[in-house]
Image (tube, rainbow, N blue to C red; front, side):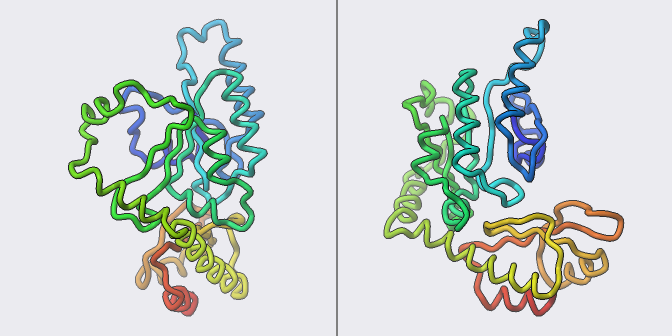
Length: 263
């Protein structure tokens, strides 16, 4: 599986792919995104290597939308990656854990229909959109693996009363609730972003989703940790740390204002 070095499947799954007998092949990323030209060059170099039969074959391409850095693929970028995958007969898989926050971002031109057309497999995140549990895996080209339910059961992943999963997604996709959830979270993130800008905070990168990455002085970080929950992301330098603030379907405007006061 080819993924960005920052890809969730590579960084934050405790080696789960390798544990199942597969390997993650990392490629450099720009703000969390794979680049089609880099991807094509990697695959071409692999097949042009006379020893490639002894190497790990690139069996699938993994992208996430939004990325782990809250950045978004534009439709053109996704089309180019999909074209490379088609050229080399490699399936394109999209991690949609936070898909709702990509679809509802004001700067995104990618629709659910586009994703279904360009990707071979993707999933619609449920838990980050307010569902109790579960994600909806979508096989887009009549390409569901044979005996898929058997495979699921053999791996201990068949949920008793599984119809409850379906009820959640039926609810999310009724009366535009899924998109409404996303728009709310991004509105709360925009409120936080504006306040952080007004207070002179430095952003690690531009994010137009529900995730905002802010550079804090280490002493400020320690003060905040006593008062709020936040995510350590990475060290910026010896005196500064990048942290992530993420809004959601459950974020209230008063919560954002309280955080702003603490900052």
